[in-house]
Image 1: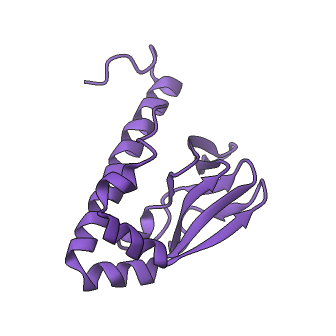
Image 2: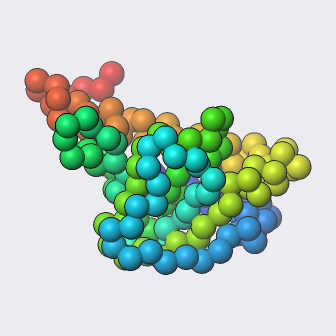
Length: 154
């Protein structure tokens, strides 16, 4: 699956907005096999991966969780923090050791509310990622379950 360009945040946010957002970040590390969140859990933070990989997965009753997408360097992990009811739609687990920037979702939402230009830029950035991931999930599901693979997506 094609990932959005690693510089998606750079393109979506001005230098000032990037700096403001990064001032709210803290550096974190996770060993391989760490569950970052579970479907239905409270979406109170998000991450931008510095190094390593994270698999996004979906619970499948009676089966092992299905990996929907694998994320890596400079990609956003978690978007559910931005949308009510602020609950995770998927699960996420590190597949290698991960270093990342972690953001407190309440603080970021508050900053976005206080600065509508920042809020619009963050909404555009995250919205683009959501759209990309929906297309990727559709393609993956068609590859897995459609009789002739994904074929033409029109």
